[in-house]
Image 1 (cartoon, rainbow, N blue to C red):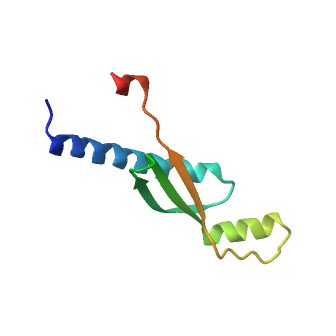
Image 2: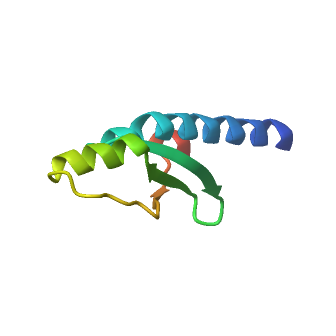
Length: 91
């Protein structure tokens, strides 16, 4: 039988693994450079939210792609990934 502290340590480790994977994988979704900002875990929804901001190089890349227009990015994108248990986790 595991203690609550051990279970919490396992959960923190799993969340850290998910954060690392998101920092590696999310930028590949875009054809321009982005910076992964805040990554937060929501225990109520069992989800992870990721904030993504286009980099300065992304604005330059988009400007060139669009024929030299001025590109401004005042906002950021936020994604929410819902986590699911694998069948092995249910055992």
